[in-house]
Image (cartoon, rainbow, N blue to C red; front, side, top):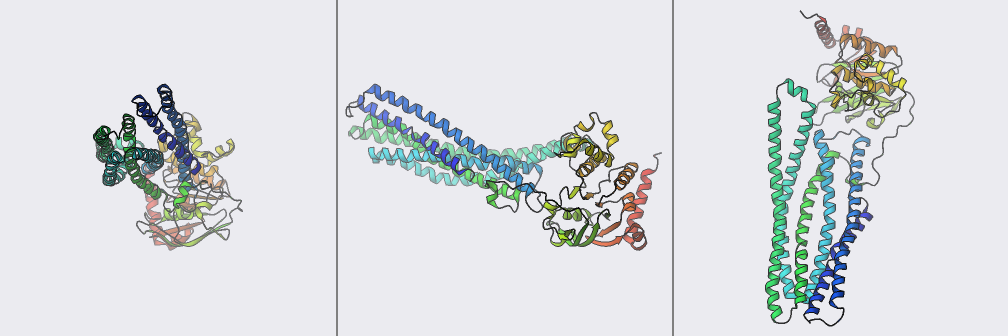
Length: 575
């Protein structure tokens, strides 16, 4: 539990708030008994009325402080839990990749955290109602045990029915949450794929799919609300039943002189709130069911995180970049990394990359090129093998292979809905000269000049206002801006035209001192490579310089000729 002291204070204040209404009932009883002559002389009626008004105001004061305390607790708890979740995903050791779509992850951060803490909020009301019920029943029992039994019996019935109803609540809360996450995810994907939808003239089908998902969400939400409404309706009906039984039994007791008018007013004042306690307990049980589902979804998002991490007082700390000697050699020995779903990946990969050298990884589609790079930088788990930096084994590539040691650009880079400069720097405190140098190395300066606001141009969701080549070069500039010891990029020039690609590689090598591990299928990259690794079905089928491979590797010759042919076709003028 987060902040237990604040939670305990809030619970205590809610207990005071719910218990204080007992006092007006006792005063009210005294007033009516005094008026009817069934009570010894003491305070006069007007004094009792004054006390009654004071007792009515006191709960409002207690309620103010109770709400303030508990709202502070839940707000701070939400911030802490979400900070812990984000901290684990970003800073914990090993590869961190949220399961499911971005929409599902957002639903877990937003809705499931809220649902879990709503269960904690429910404890306050349930505790207060239970405290009131216990004290009220004790007072009523001392007045007349038989009439009190008429109050208790319907309460027991509520407990039995509640157990049945909460089972349905548990079932449909899970289904409703999953349906809501699917709608959220689909809407997010729909907005980021507007151009693709319009080009395919798929607007009616996409909207039809959204309508179908919304229909499923509506049906499950309605069923969930039906169960919750049944729980509340049954509780209210039980309160009315208890009050009716009190009326019947009280009439008989008043005829016998065992029950006064003051006793009756006290019972009438207490019955509604006392019989509500099982209903509040049922609500708490229902919330627990939905909280269990929410907590399960949060745990799924975090994967192997310990449950205690979610409510840890100190979140997972950012990765501390220790001072590291400059890269002299990067050695990969026996590296094996497999995808858990398909079992495909790379097996027993060996290579050595020395400072200032360029190693190009190539091969046919599905040969394991991207998997190899992701394993080296820690984005995928390693089943076997070792990565060594200057001869020292790297025990956790995910935390080690980060700037300023290493910078990575994915095959499909991600940009944010911010300015181009913010996408390149991403919070990096760098001088303008470093930004300009990164833009130049990425061959992006001409494009920046043509943009309406230069580097301050907003690129839109995922860089939608930029071309594919501009997105790739913006991501490359992000990598260059960090001046890392090792550049790792996955087909970073695949969307570039021949002229721009030639300039990209030329500037990279003319700047000197860059150590690169890259996936590429471009002739320009092959010509500048010190070593080329040819992958086939996840293994190194051949390695060497361009000249060696053209002489000794049939597979590479096939790849080379296919690329040369495709390049020649791309340069032919359109008739």
